Length: 268
Ligand SMILES: Nc1ncnc2c1ncn2[C@@H]1O[C@H](COP(=O)(O)OP(=O)(O)O)[C@@H](O)[C@H]1O
Ligand SMILES: [Mg+2]
Image (cartoon, rainbow, N blue to C red; front, side):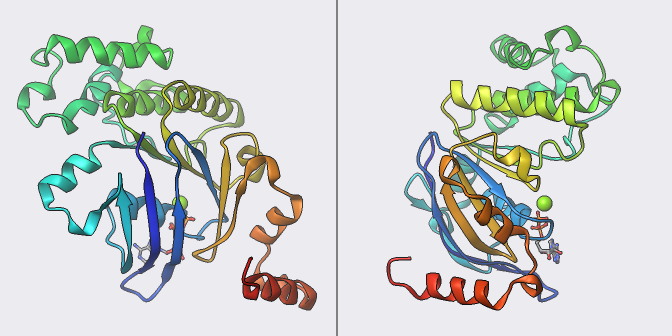
């Protein structure tokens, strides 16, 4: 269980787009966070900054109490190997089997070429890869090429590959956006049951409100790159959610005044 602290994180892209503006939050170990927001609100940018795929413009990220910008590259690699990532478009190698893709999840532990191929990988790792596939109920399709699996099955292989990594923190970016509703529900149910049983800290982005309300402990809502909402899921109100999706042009004068009051109040 990895603790994560984000402090004043800002990301401005080279073209001047401010994707994130002064983001602050801390996760509790084992906490399930849903990061909710309309398209373009900055969700993917935030996950990419945490994983180091994107450099923050300013602000700081702490993992396990360590400030990432102060680590050397070897320490950083070790720290990041504890973070698993699941993407909207699965990112599997289509020409390889499901089993082979899952095995590659071990590459964060060792860069030895032995790990590249099922025939040369250590027995222990092959056994583990099979267990991960079993956990996502796909052991029977282990030898099938990834690009011949359905979308839902491919996402389950991607989850198994992440488990293979033994992550402490999982970042999940729009896991169901490429799936039909039924497959999406199966993937979400499976993902969250694994997260709970292994007590993993998870940050899962979603843009669909209806799905967001059903999973996790806490919702962080982004709007235009800023945190608009940060609340326990069971305390979420319809009003919170409406605000999140309303464009600023649509806010009434009263709502703008309301928000100004909230933001200027010392306790708010
Ligand atoms: N590589 C990039 N270069 C410039 N702007 C980008 C880049 N990636 C994302 N953006 C912009 O940053 C904002 C946030 O994007 P993103 O993080 O992808 O949002 P979300 O995942 O919530 O849809 C958007 O305005 C988007 O157009
Ligand atoms: Mg996105």
